[in-house]
Image (cartoon, rainbow, N blue to C red):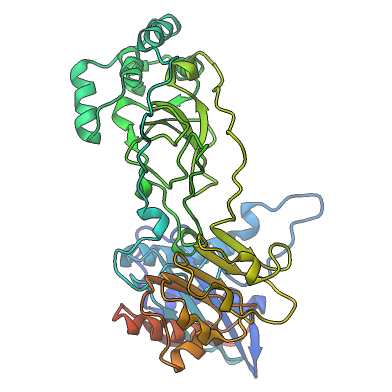
Length: 467
């Protein structure tokens, strides 16, 4: 790894990149264009993507860290430079001649561009500063008549927990009041009863290493400390723009839980041990109870699963009496048209359609005429080559997010027809393509909204001939 006593490498110094470039050259990765080797990749503080042909582990042994030591050490030099420059992630392209003469182009970063995923191409383009996808702007609908479950019993809950956790240190009323002031919400009586028994601070457990396990068994989850309660609102459930724009918030009339991203009435108090958060729900769905217990899956971006009608039921392991109330017969608000889902745009069209995704297709491209004029359509994603006429997009007047292939974007840009209603956009790249033309398109789109460009920094040097 980089010597901590040596001068910090500079991100814009070719010497910082030489170990990575030598690995790529020696690997022979990338597309060959004439006599020069062309490569592209991405390095970030959290990971990297390089087109390397890695050596196979010896027969009978799984790959180990030692097998990637050269790669890790080369990348670490760049990551130190990223940290020093205050940059999270950067992509690059390089052209390396057989003589070793090298031209390296660093692409970005830009505060208006999300990093790509495992690719040197740009991710979502944030055309309007601070804009968030529609599902993240949705607030809870009122649920007239919603009330606590009849089984909610703070006194029983507190007695049960004191029997199970006789040595726990509970929160004072002042500490509970402080938590309420921090959160900006009054805690429900059951949650107060729980924390009066145990404030769940690890410092309180001293040398008792099994105390956390006993508390988990007693409550039914890994309980947060009172100081760590948080509101599971929409901003707390982060999601990349291109995925978030494809979501839809839907709450059927028989639902116990609203299909939200997050809610100011969801108070997260625990974890199931697998990264899914438990919360008290003060903004239930039409068939739910105030104070019911829900679980927010880390694998989902919207909605939550009902676990118990109240905290008392969770602790006493009493299942919810809610059974769904029937199926939802409404057509989907987010429709996918491809070789394995819906087979036509007509089949996806209905007045409630919010998201239309045109995926991999093996037939004639689609017309957008069936969805023209739909009042709620806000997201269109179209795999390269799936649109018969990209200019039909101009008739979709409510789009907030648009994801197209480079050729389709070229048509809109050349015609001056990029929808001005957009908040964000993305470029879908099919297969391995040179990042530079994609970055050029991205910069044209960013310029239409006067947003920060993806800056190219060109570094030149000589790696020397191959050994």
